[in-house]
Amino acid sequence: MASGGRSTSPGPAAALPETLSNPVLRGFEPDPSILRVGDDYYIATSTFEWYPGVRVHHSRDLVNWRCLGGVLDDKRLLDLQGVPDSGGIWAPGLSYADGLFHLVFTVVDTYGEGWKDLPNYLTTAPSIDGPWSDPVPLHARGFDTSFFTDEDGGSWLLNMRFDWRPGRESFAGIQLQRYDRAARRVVGEPRTIFRATDAWVTEGPHLYRRDGWYYLVTAEGGTGYDHQTTVARSRAIEGPYETDPAGPMLTSRHDPALALQKAGHCSLVQTPGGQWYAAHIVARPYTERGRCVLGRETALQPVEWTEDGWPRIAGGVPAVQIPLPALPPAPFPEHAATDLFEAPRLGPEWSTLRRPATPDWVNPAPGRLRILGGQSPGSRRAPSLVARRVTDPTCVFETRMTFEPRTGDHLAGLTAYYNTRNWHYLHLTADDDGIAVLRLLSCEAAQLTAHEPAIPVGDAASVVLRAEFDGPVLRFAYDIGGRSRQFPMELDATTLSDEAADEFHDGMMRTLGFTGAMLGLWVQDLDGAGVHADFAYATYRDGRP
Image (cartoon, rainbow, N blue to C red; front, side, top):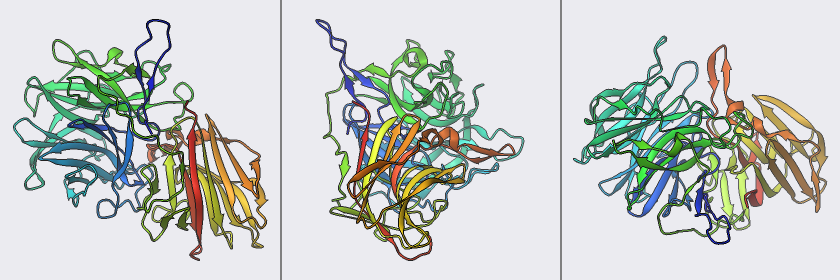
């Protein structure tokens, strides 16, 4: 399905030109790293605690995008067991050299109480579809790594430097270090080439060369409402770098009325015709500076170069509509709304939580997806959750499930999920007398609420479960024996947001909210009895025309 879209305004004689609609990647798709290889464009995005790691999206016209799925799809490439909520994969960097795709990425194992454990890796592949090489460890000094190959063939690794020491600025600047592609390792000492502007929180570096200048594009201000993109340049790769005197290339912090907020974290790409574009983060709050249920998304903006050689975005703000790129249209076939699980593997729209979708717990077969029960909703080791992103403020997700719970330790159903501490869950379980009932359970900041009533399912062979997002409102419904009913309450959908997920304790960070709302199929087997649930289909429809 095309994530962006063409829109045409009707008119009698002079119709308005077609435009591209932002965001082009909707829902939880942050930290874009954009790359062109020939006539193909790729965007890699962060996936945090979700498998497969590092989602890649493909386009040939910058308008129509298809998700290819995640690159890091097994434990040889990525181990997410035990990572914290919004830990795992942060801000990957995708590049191309020597006929190989190069992917650098950070696996954030720890980020709370003043510490961060930040191992960084590099993997390569001859095709975007793989096979991807065993990851090479790089360093653990910081995150947001990217890879730059200069005109002389030399390669460099960039990252933000994290300083854990009390009393120091933890975002300690942008580092540069040589990388030996033949030896597959960093060489020499890292050098700090850029500190912060007065916006602080300098991260997300990408390096480009144009007309004898090196351009360092960074994110600053934090990834929330003060987010921005800062550009600096130098004649020498190691600096010194001067900051664009005009200020940020992109930000929405000065105008809370803009539809697209949190703008920043840009990476750049040039078309064969010489046009430049920036891929960057945006978010769509439901109210001014309110909660962002869809998480941080990816948008595109055209970039123009001034006569004195600075890259600029019109107005320095994100636009919902931009002129259509001067590229031949290249739409993809429309993606089916309903998945019948007829393929031997899950499709690219699906993600699994903290562990890859291996046959020991996920088994697609024609007409059903079998999920073996996993650990509790609070588990960071072996949960059994198969989910997809919420991409629009209004959407519906539906499935038909067959499940035979024997005790209250057996649960299966449909969840609207943010992280282990924030979710809503319509599920089938058993009461103490063994009678199967539907229940609705909510978790907000790790506090559980069991909603009434419990609904007996009788001798029904299967149940249909449905979740509906209606902006800030979440509703659940069910169908037992052909009779459709809505669960008699409305829930606050905004608890499934970045802002609601952020938690601090005694001034110290406890949990970050970096992902976005998901809808998924969830199964728990808390007593280890080996129970499973079968899902006949899953249908997702959003409210876009």
